[in-house]
Length: 354
Image 1 (spheres, rainbow, N blue to C red):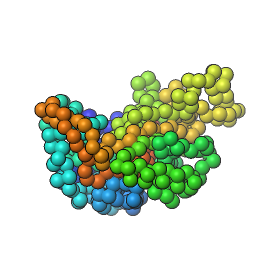
Image 2: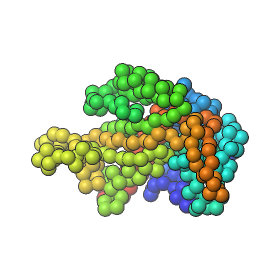
Image 3: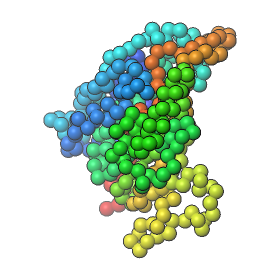
Image 4: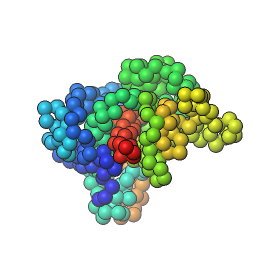
């Protein structure tokens, strides 16, 4: 299987399956001399871990990261940083009923088609549990980018969405509720919506907005490695993501150029920021902001018609522990992938000119 490495200079390679012994990764290209806050790394993992509230999967995992190389006395050595997270609460029997059955909208059939074999225990390598490794690497990338501010939050659930600009929101409120929303009224509505859907044995999607502040002008590598292109790839590589837009996004397609152009101030900033902090694929010093769309979780606790490996129609119902809405737990994953992209381009920018 190829495609397990992300990045050009600051690289992450992940390994492991949902119900294997452990998941983990190797970070290559992290500069030496970076003093790490280990508690901050674990805090980000705790934000992603299962079992943290009544609106997420009740799989119980401590998600404690164990570092095996690349760090000495809390400081990076410049060598590959190896780490693992042991899977403590495996219940593979929850998936025995789909050993020969393909779950609708999952990767089951395409993995079988491509490899001729699949790990049916929670989806194996295709499980979103793999993203815990990304959060570890992203937490280290955040510390490399210590002057940057990266804040992601739940901005919609189903047809409920925050109708305020991010400048009017209090990012300090994000971690004060189970849905990770910076507005208490919307947080309550989002949580009620998720619980309503969960009781019906169904699932629901939503969006996450990410705002990155204090990014200097000049990050990004045209033509094919534009900053927004790499952010898009990073977000679309996350499980259940169906869409990405930055700046004005699809709304910009409805506007005229005279409405959309960001006019300059004398200090080089812009009066508006419909560009989303990126012009020509390069950061311009303004806030970078984007939105990521997540589909409803594919596993439903209700009967659905599907097929088995013999091509026969069968009925199945999801079992085990699943999120009714993936969005709240995906917030730290979006932040982590954004940090990986920015760390990579930050290090690449060092070689641009003397």
